[in-house]
Length: 257
Length: 284
View (tube, one colour):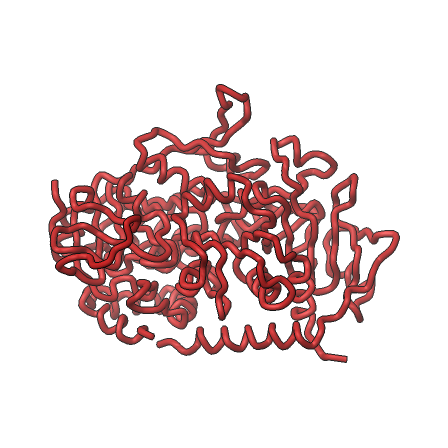
């Protein structure tokens, strides 16, 4: 039995969601680690795209920003940012968007804009960046986020990016024909949208985590699937590759003046 | 009119005045930090600052009191956290109140493209189901006259001045960009005037690919040679992003006094010549 942390469990589970032939628009932070882990393990041909315009990038270390030089040096091609958003994203060429959030509701609607009132915020967050259109233009969306009552709320303070809206077929009423959030990977479990209601239901629980742990760390009433799986633990190879990636990254980012 | 070679002091003084709308662009790469410092040194005020990712460069300009309004789509220190000066201005009104106009990246990229293309607005599939249209009156929806599809529309970006950094200019004043090229070309072509700082001025461009991103000298107002002028951002082929300084900025900017002391020491008492040493330190 290999020891691993809840964050490693989350990152490995998130990486397994990606397939070798996916074309993935990568958000910074947790998504970036998961996407590169997938590329370095089971999905070597996975195409990773960052909003800085780098297409098919294969960085040796995780970028601190979405535009570190290594993303360009290892990419198949680097295109101007308007082209990135117009032809590649809006043009429907990207199969998966991988996003994180500050606040999330049970329909996978994302807030990365403000906590509190927009005009008089308690906390001003960075904003949407690429996410509002990544959320609607990619074939489907995977979300990765550590679970907490503060982050997983009944009602988000601001809808930065559309998930399943108010549930059911609400998403389509905005003229959006893509699938939207199809998987939410946390440090406790994996959730997937209910086939009809589109609210997240727990479909797989990470080993050692109880239903109570999930309920205590969720601001909405948690629903479990009829058959809940146990998430397979990270294998030794995945953990080694992930830890090496983080070690290379830490060394690269601290090594500068 | 053909581009003129100037000092940074002369370029900023002759192109940017109080109340102007200014775009300093560079998508993580090639951010014109030396030019931003010069705007702070010249105490230019009431600027409307436009930038997709107002990271450290606009944190400095906002904290130093140069900005009246910010138009942006992602305001953070990438991979590190918040922009404390931006947050202080928005939440506490320090050093004074800052008006914000917030968009998505797709909207701003399209708006620059429309500005460069001479269009009044940009039309795109955006903001669907998103809440920004409720708080930003510059986001509207129009109907496609052919299909009836609802499309987002935002005004074209047409800055008074665009400020960007590039790798090279030649002696004639043509400018070459390489690597992550962001929206720099669009910003310059959309603007009335432009200042371009470069790593070096060369006699001729050798072995430039046929499709390299270039601006001919007649499309540029002022060119200034500032080696290292993008630091702590980077210039592909010259020096790396100083990620350690982006992390250090989080602490410097988190406190009004330490921020002000840093600006006094490194900007007010500094000059564009200080950037060359940063370039050397971040090579390799």
